[in-house]
Image (cartoon, rainbow over all chains, first blue to last red; front, side):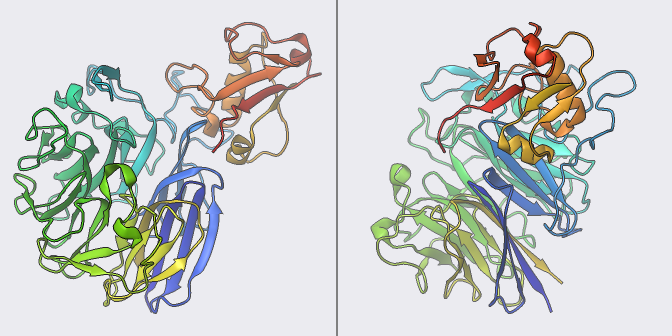
Length: 395
Length: 98
C-alpha cells in the first residue's frame, strides 16, 4: 500500500508526518533541529528517502542537512570530522553550508547592488536558503533559491554549492527590491519535458526563465501589473509570491502575485489575470491538483499588511477551470476568529488516486484534505509557525 | 589545551556536550582558536565567522575572563588564562529574543 510523508518546516524545527495510503492515522516525528528555522525540506523524486533541508538562524547562518533514510537520521553533507578541510594545495574546501556568490572572472558576475526599501542601492548579502528543489533525474543535484536573490546548485549531494550567476548578473539587479520577507528567490520549477528549462521567481523582481540550464535568463513578466512600482508594467520589480505548474503541462503556469492570481499558457511569455471571484487578490501559496491540470488552489489573505483571512474565515479557494471561477472550500476549516496566514511554500499535494491537498499555517496547524479540497482535517494543531509543507507519495 | 564553550545550538550542530578542548599551535588568538575549532568541526564553518570575510557574525559575541573580546582584532593574543587552559573562551549567541 502507498504511504504519504509530509515534510513540515517551522520557525522552531522540522516535523515529519507519515501515514499509510488511507491517510487516517498520522505519526509525528520531531522536532528535528529544535529551535532552528527550517525554511524548507524536500525529497528527491528519484530517490525519495534522500531529503534535503534548509536549516537557518539569524545568529549562526545557513546549514544544509541531508537524510538518506527518509528523515530518520540527518547529517551535513560537507567534509566529515577528521578529514582535511583544505585541498592538497591549501585551498579551503567548499562546505555544505557555504553559499558564496560567484564573482570569478571565469564563471561569475560582479557583485552589484539592488534597490533597498527606501529606494537607495544596497549591496547583495547572502542571508539564507529559502527553497531547495532536487533534480527530477539525479539525486545528487539540487537547486537552492537564496536571499539575497540568487540560484545555487549542487551536483555532489549537497557537499558544495555553486551559484548559477547568470541570473543575478542579468543586468536588471539594481531594480530588484526586497519584499517584506526579504529579497528571496522562493520558487524553482524544473520543466519535466525539457531539462534545460527552469522557471524561478523572486520577491520583488518577478519571474525568470532559462532555456540553457541556468547559463542565461530572461524576465517573463509581460502582463503583470504592480501599481506600487513607478511603471506598473515594468520588465522587473513585480512581487511574485509563488508559481505552480502541472508536470503533464509545463507550459502552463499559475501565479499568486502580491496582488492578482495570474495564468500563462506560453511558458511565461505572457500572463493573464484569473482572479475572477476571489474575495481578495492577495495571498501566498498556489498549487495544482495532482491529476487535474486545470484544478488549482489558493488561500486568499486580506491585503498586504494584515496577512490573515478575510472575515476571520480560513478558506481555500479551488478553481476547476484553470482560474476565473473559484469556489470556497470551508468544510473542516475554522470559519470564525481565525487569523493565521499560509505562507508561500506551505501548500502541497500528494499523488494518490484521490488527490490529497495539504497546507500549514502560521498558527501551527497542518490541514489535510483527502478529497481534493472538499473536506479538511488537521493532522497536527499546535506546531510552531509553519514555513513550508512538502508531500511525498511513497510506494 | 584551549577550552572553548559553544552556544547550545552549535553544540548540537557539532554533536558535542560541554566544553570543547583544542590543541592550538603558536600564538593563542581568536583567529587561531577559531581556525582550530573549525578544523575539528567543519560544520561550524560559517556559523561563527563569515565564510568569505572571516568577520564575526553580528549576533555572535566572544568573552573570556569576564571581558568582552568581541571587538578585539582577531590576531590579538587572548588572555594568558585562556592560553593556559585555566579559563574557557566563550562563544555566545547574543540575547535578542525569538
